Length: 81
View 1 (cartoon, helix red, strand yellow):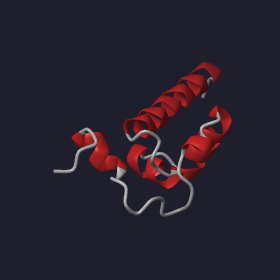
View 2 (cartoon, helix red, strand yellow; view 1 turned 90 degrees about the vertical axis):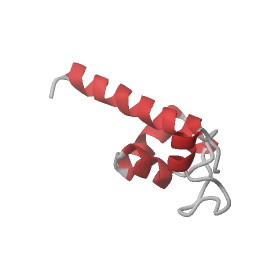
View 3 (cartoon, one colour; view 1 turned 135 degrees about the vertical axis):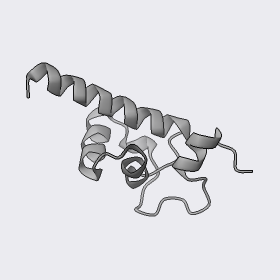
View 4 (cartoon, rainbow, N blue to C red; view 1 turned 180 degrees about the vertical axis):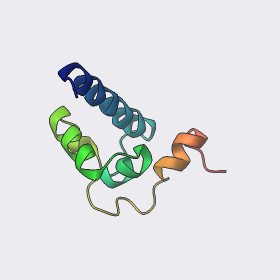
């Protein structure tokens, strides 16, 4: 894989993670983001650490039990009817 291709893949992954997290106001875990984007947990972890996003996310494997899940919020605009 060329250097240019690797940079393009990295940028695309960054956008996918940012978009998923932003859609729920960063009220999600890295595990949520991995599940939503289809990326590996390791890729999400590396990207969030490199971009300085780890402090924006909620911590813990289970996250906040009372929150709306990422997939519901993304597909329903944050509303649960």
